[in-house]
Amino acid sequence: MRLDPQAQQVLELAANQPPIFTLSPDQARRRIQKALAAEPPGPEVALVRNLNAGGVPARLYHPSPAYAAPVLVYFHGGGWVINSVDTHDSVCRFIASHSGCCLISIEYRLAPEHRYPAAFDDAWAATRWIYEHTGELNVDRSRFAVGGDSAGGALATAVALRARDSRDLDIQFQLLIYPITDYHTPARQSYVQYAEGYALESEGMKWFWGHYLPPGVDLNDRFLCPLRAPDLRHMPPAFVMTAEYDPLRDEGREYAARLRASGVAVEESHYADKMHGFIRQYHRIDRAREALLEISQKLAAALLVR
Image (cartoon, rainbow, N blue to C red; front, side, top):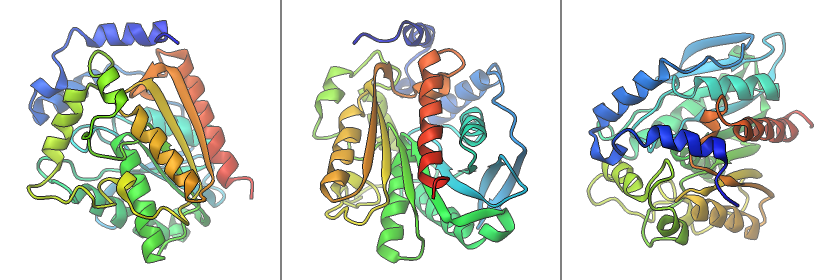
């Protein structure tokens, strides 16, 4: 299947700018912030407020504050280097408003100012704090999920791994959108096949990893590269979404396959005409809106129907 014509138009507009791996992190963040100012707002949500989640900034989106809703703790993508709760505000509003679930978006620390494991430490601390304060947040601890896109997907499933190992939290579901699950070597077919020209490029992933990793890090650390975890049994059920024109395609599908082989219930959805990051373009790409509706429906089915 060929790339969606609307997605192709988005890529052509982006092609006028220098690749992210030619910029400094500060330059990349300023460019994203400038583009964000021109973006249309997301859907209205009954209650949106910023909060402090155990020392980690976060933003809560509650669609129905009158009752204790299921909750999704969400981690934004951006290679652990760029993006924020603001860049993903529209997506988070969409999921909260269409799923009936409360969504809490986490503002974890970014690299290279804060290298691994800072982002993961923040993700875990915030998730644990939310789990321990569900009453005051008016969310239901028995219907508790984690999720994220790209680097945020890596953080989400790493939090689920730690929760399983520590038994401190009972996470019911993980929502993984084109997740990072492994280091970029050895090169998978999708890294070679879609190395350049499709939003996220292979050199861009190397740039992200280069800023994120501290010297001497163990690449077999399961919280860093979840695909390398020796045991994935007893993980929460998962929904894994992948895109065809994406260097991360193969590691996302491999992770879903490993979860399934470990006895974990997994649903997959593959968008064969899309590139990495496409859900944030739902104002411009019709099928991106369809993908967000699918994400919202899967979340609702996992948490609401109980």
